[in-house]
Image (cartoon, rainbow, N blue to C red; front, side, top):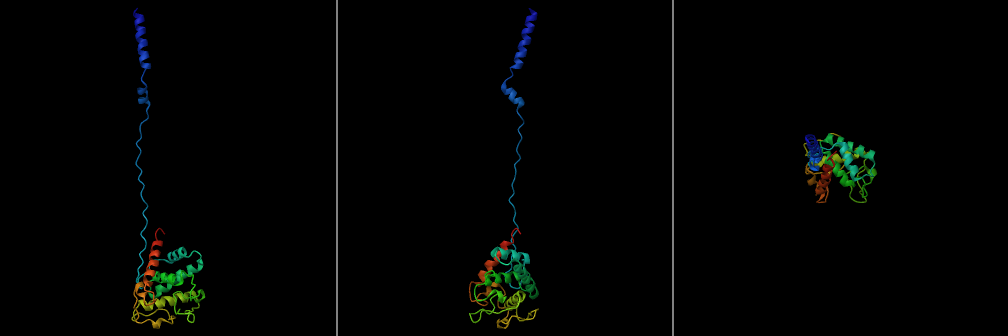
Length: 220
């Protein structure tokens, strides 16, 4: 009898152990919860655009490569090798005479329609700022080479930007230099309106091109 009771108790214990609840099993086997780390995505910080002075005698901030890249954005069909040469001529010639090559480049873009021409002045004139372009009988000055055309442009800007106390470094080739009086009457691009050009909005047009040039330097 005692043996039967012993076996009964033993079997009861085994049955209870086997009847563990599903919730207990799930609790024992549930994998640990891994907290996901918060991933912070930082916004890219773009560099500030270069600030170009509108003063014709100030130091430029655009390199020859940047002038070239800006121009090609505006006129992708232009002769790339020519624009590389031109950008270097403008940097070089303006530096010699203390003229802001950024402003001179913007004026060349405005006057020539980004070297598309189409008015009185023709590409073979190498006249990049409309010097002497008045009418069909006076279509503009003609220069032998690209560099001389750039030099004449810079010299004419010199006449507007610099006073009589300042002297040119290179030999004068701008035939219209003497007609700018008084010298230094347009120290910034804005005074070129109504002086260099009859267009009262001339300075604002140059300003808009310079603003585009500034934005073109972002991320480059």
